[in-house]
Each structure stands twice: as C-alpha cells, then as structure tokens.
Length: 97
Image 1 (cartoon, rainbow, N blue to C red):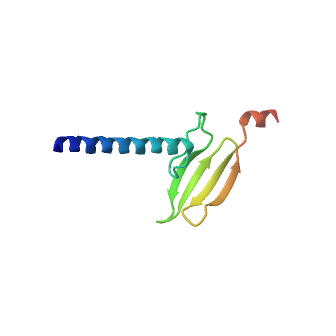
Image 2: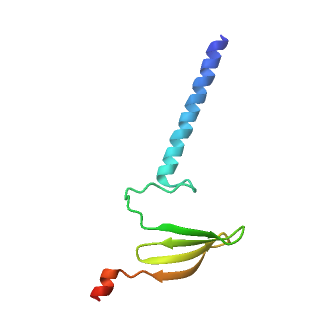
Image 3: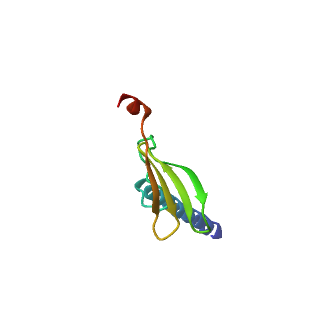
C-alpha cells in the first residue's frame, strides 16, 4: 500500500515539473520573461555592446554599436543616459559622395 503511495507522489511531482517546464518555454518564446529576450527568427544581430566600463558601484558606461550609429550610454541610475551619439559613415558612400 505504501509503495503505491510513493509511486503516485513521484508521478505527481514529475507531472508538476513538466507543467512548469512547458510554462517556462511558452513564456520564453513570447518574451514575457523579463530577463529573457523573445526569440527572433532573424539571425542577423544589429546591436552589440562592444565595451563596458564600471564607473562606480552603481553605474556602468556602455559602448553600443549599431550599423548606423555608435552610442555611449550610462546605465544603473533611475534612467539610462545617452552621453554621446556618433554617426558612422560607410567608406564606400564617402568615396562616391
């Protein structure tokens, strides 16, 4: 009698853990988890954090690179602050124009 009770408990635990796994996968794919980005079908990444510098215990300076512009952003306070924006010029465009 007791062995069947243990088997039911283990099966119930496995069922609950599998339900939690399904919910986690659904939340991850829809982007509802705050620390996990939604999966994008496009594999080309357009933004990149190329450098990071710790300013103090709370603030960090990030160099963010996109195809058109470079950004310097201070994060860690109440709101992120954009310090500098640099326009990137394509060499082929500069030679032609």
